[in-house]
Length: 113
Image (cartoon, rainbow, N blue to C red):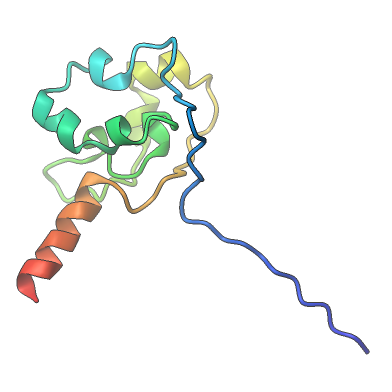
């Protein structure tokens, strides 16, 4: 009896489409939310413009002072940016491990070790 080996590719993040920008012909979330320059410098929504902000883990909006890890998208459901551009589709995180909180945890580990 022959066994079939199936290769499955699992990716933690989508491949960036060269030249594609989700925000083309739209007002970006950081402008609609009036983000400060400090926030824009750190937020992955600005860095990874090939995806909408609600599909990126660890955006500034998804973090709070109570220990949120940047994966909770419930704030997105009430956000005017998502309501304007999300098309009512269910929210699914597509870019993981590149967010603000993830970066801070990496820095804490380096500093401790």
